[in-house]
Amino acid sequence: MKEMVGILKGDKVRKAEIPRPSKQLVDRFQKLPDRGGLVARAMDSLGISGTIPAAVLNPISPGGSVVGPALTVRNIPEREVPYRYWERGDRTLLGEREAFFLAEPGDVVVIDGASVYPASCLGSMSVTLAGRLGVAGIIVSGAVTGVSGIRATNTPVWARGGTTITGHHRLETIEINGPIGIENIRVDPGDLVVADDSGISVVPLAWVEKVLERAEKMAQRGARFKTLLKEGADRETLRKELADEMVALMESSVK
Image (cartoon, rainbow, N blue to C red):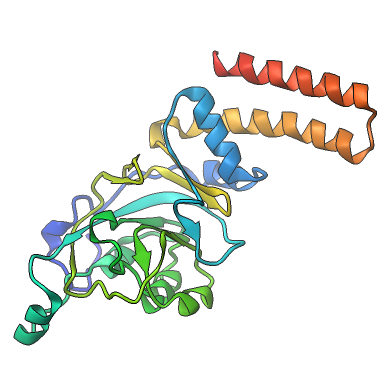
């Protein structure tokens, strides 16, 4: 296992190595237009529940996007108030930084902090560190602090919002690289995370190729219609193309 920082005990890491989609597949996802919503619609047509709208977890810096395998972090509340831990000189068990050192370049760290909300699961210094270590993006089902500092980095972050409440001595990172649930969506280590300003889609690893194929077909159909709009096609041409597109969409969803 990679050398850890020492914030957490090694037994908190459920998997030191995780399966990941191939770089070739990731590259194809990155070429999709408006990919957050497009991938979500592709999963809808295949019966997969796996998307979180930006209305729930919003981008801290609009304009960011990311495609990469998930590395998961699960946080739970501490039992005592923070003052007791500070008084005893106990060390913090906020361990997202351990995950950053376990990550491979291109990974997306996904943090379950719902049970400790609105305490912070992430700060600007951690985000800067994550970027330095090659983390492609961070998803937080919870709050973050140091918002202006996060916006100054090049690492995209999605979260419920900002907070002034520190996570130190309010939460414990109980597990890294185990299955988690964020905003009613399951995330397993190695699942593919696709996120942009529209929201976040989590593609189960076993479905990555199938979802990609469906999304690419949808993109091709959409591209034809956009071309007609750009070229100033007449009303009847647009009506017929749109009708044909809707039929093709419904047929593809049942195959």
